[in-house]
View 1: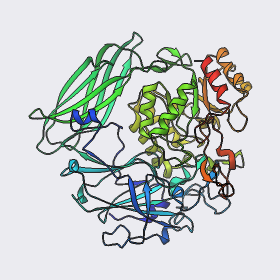
View 2 (view 1 turned 90 degrees about the vertical axis):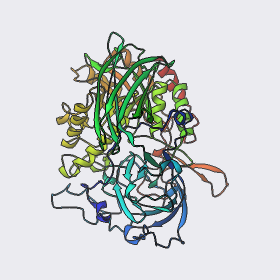
View 3 (view 1 turned 60 degrees about the vertical axis):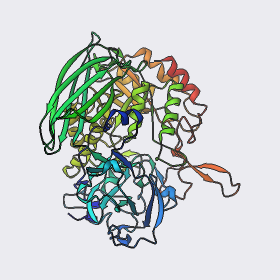
View 4 (view 1 turned 180 degrees about the vertical axis):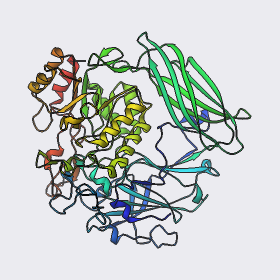
Length: 633
């Protein structure tokens, strides 16, 4: 198969040859590597790449992926990173509108009529920047002679991939990993990886979040080698009974190479390494992929995972060959907890849940949305210091380590899928869904369901994930109804959240387990809760922290004493989106916000509405947060 630039225009083509989404488990060849965290089965491709910027698809070097292509005039760029932050294109911040508003007339394919295919909308656009990346590499010793996959943890927004001149695949979802099989074309030495990234595609209509509109390879790129026996997929299913007893089930997909057989061993240990469960089963010989199920096993009395005391248990999956040699070991930390709605009240482990939450963009004043462990650990310390117990991952999946940090520190997560189509239904501040996506348009259904599935498959094992969120501000229709139904059928251990049904009440019985509002006043909250409410109420966004804000926080928090069905909410938002720059007059390092880059349309300093500044200094308003969130826990 050859790559086709017209895929940028087609909402029904959002991936080609991309491997199925799966759990975020790590794997190692032996226990020594696991303990040292030095994985010989993984090879990072982060670092310096060759790079060429083009204003649009038509002017890009279309054959740059060929092994005989002369790239001597290419620049260099650091991966991961945003192309704009490397000095190309321009920084552009916009909230609800689409970024081309006022410049170009665009409507989503099929949104006005079934014959409007959107042909050439992005592939032939005068302005739709493209980045051409090249990386030469040799395989590390531990990867030799094995099946090799490549994982792009985040590429914004549409990505084509070639290896050694051969087309490997295409993907669009910017914030979940895209993996491709490189085995047919990989060599021991002298490999050429070519990656073409386009700033906009049909995915742009689904990724209209309130943020700077970057593009590029902004999360890590890693090669992974598969052992002859390999856990492809892991779904751990811990249950907590009201009695305090725990039980554990699991589903796995395991591949075995031709001629190999052996056994799988699953074990569970307590915090001190004491054994709680050990389960074995034989593995079918030479199956490319086989599903294995461990039915629910009694564990006995367990300590619950809770926001105040996040107890985690260590699970291991070990694969042994026919000679009983360890081939692969998978570690995973899990927890026992129960989230449910009882008498219209959300309860965690039987107790009413109060969400002292924030919405959190991934952000760095130095590197935009390209952040590392240092920033994540700083954010976690800020949350804990200020009594914040919940995070909504607005409005896309975060990097994998963040979910592990939340597991370890007792932070409840509302895990949001990568979906916002704000500009398609709200125009000039009014609800006007005449050309809304995804709505009930069949051409957009699979792209949206794929984003929901990817979010679920990646993070389904994290005890901190108490809510799945279908996305943000995308109105409501048959597509999101189908997404809600898919999650309901798949996972009964969590609740489903979506705010948009407030805008379209015809779907309130079929979308979302909770009533979710944005910026409802205390009077509106009372009105809902005093008139036979159907669902518990969450404010997925409130206390918009822009300027001298948060002074009225007490009037919201006091409602927690009056109404059990009011469960708290998530402040908008955690961190300012601003970028360090050198002031042209003083030469000092200063923060620049939306509109400071001659970006139009723009919502200007609206990018600065966090409770911490972009450099992570706490704002004075944090005193209010710490006081009230410490009082109501």
